[in-house]
Image (cartoon, rainbow, N blue to C red; front, side, top):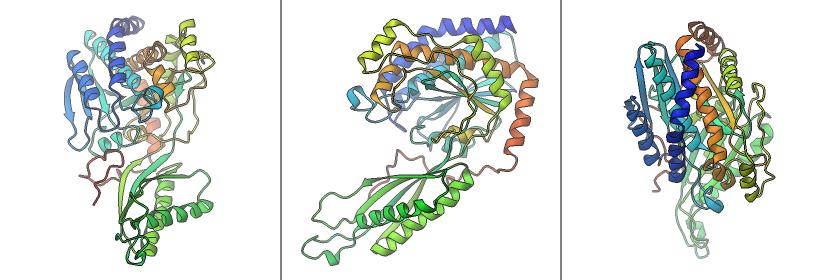
Length: 443
């Protein structure tokens, strides 16, 4: 086992230059959710070059794919993401990797390669499966992939995310629904005969007011946020069309389902009050994530063996030029069991097989998430150092799962215990294409 793990680490070192290049290229592409054509294509090219077969793509989920190497069980999955964010490019202009997904996808890809290479050299039975997952930032990709059967038949799943700390993440986030609400009214001259018009923007605003009154009666752990994504174009025309985009969050799927019903009633009431027509579209539906202590402990042992990323004087000077103090959290932290306030479509995958993830330090203290300062570090030696640690830990843990039957059995027993009272419902209707952000054709 020690010899095999040493070979995996050697594989990671041999792949380092190629991995760094891929991370920088995806960082430069900086493609938004559902538009990651070049990033997805590059990922598939790299995997194919290293002996993986692209076994499935998804007509309803652009830029999603599954790549596999090996045969038979166990089947170990790794999740890769590669979408960027708006307003995170240089000086907060244009798209950029303000969440570090250029690092995320690359580490998962090369961890899969290193684990599969070592397993094949040892003539081990088993399959390493890499999931190319678009549109995490809009919480869409894995939701629709899960609906379409992508994650069935897995024995375990590994994930990670760039962070400001280095630790195994055995916590959860919130479940979430995303909705687009469109209102259709009638135009009229806003001064000459406003009584002849029916304002779609009035409907949006009435709905927002109703939801804001609803906040008093929500469970404390729930959250609702919205934007007006189309509020018409001219104040002297009664607007015939307006649209809002809502997120509804709760601790689990039931909490979101219950609150979403009330939010949708606010939309119906707004349409009735403004005499407009309402169209609702359910864009995505994320689950919370059950913990798995068995996998967390196994991954933590590998993280301790690899150690945290180490940062240099040049790294500190780089972030100081970005306006930060130049400090990093460079020590390993204990396994996290916290429930965060955010949501991830990763949660949906965790209801199909035991899942564990980790964070590694890829940014300095004080770095704002979803910012151009984070994006700048994601395309620097700072981000690459954290990415290399993640790749090694993922590869080592994948190897453990390929070879350790007792670990797999323990993780599965815990998974069954934690999920036995919930039947997974994809929520999103079959056949509905994944949305490009909140883009819904106007009338």
